[in-house]
Amino acid sequence: MLNFKKLFLGLLFSVLFSAVLIAVCAFMILKLGFLPSEPILGTAAAVIGGVSVFASAFLAARLAGEKGLLHGLVLGTLYAVFYVAISVMLYANMRVVLLVIRSVIFVICSVCGGVMGVNRDEKIRF
Image (cartoon, rainbow, N blue to C red; front, side, top):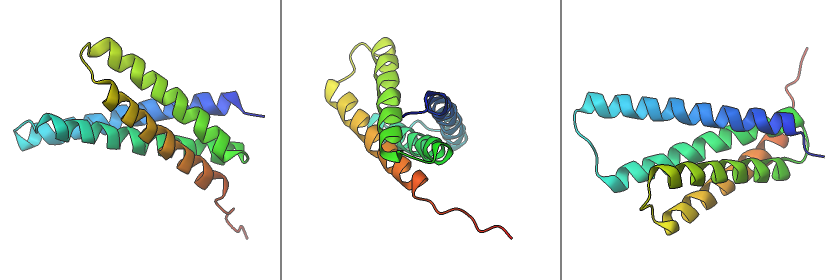
């Protein structure tokens, strides 16, 4: 059975990790002194989301110790729904194709993270 507490912690970690990565990217843009074009910023947002959801699914599946594919799938879907809801509230003219592509990226990265988190071998302790 799914461990909803660990999924919630994974989702919370993913949102916080995304916020930290966005802050780091914003700081780098500020230091560079120019704003990149819109496609570069969109790609950066997709990469940040993918990395954060991969790390959170890895962590949640590692903590659960079983069913990494299912944990990753649920976590990625929750993150994608959260992302779509925020995007619709902030940007009225957001293209649906971009939302679908980014949501699929998030789910695929999350599933990969969940599978890798469960299949990671335990460390040998002496």
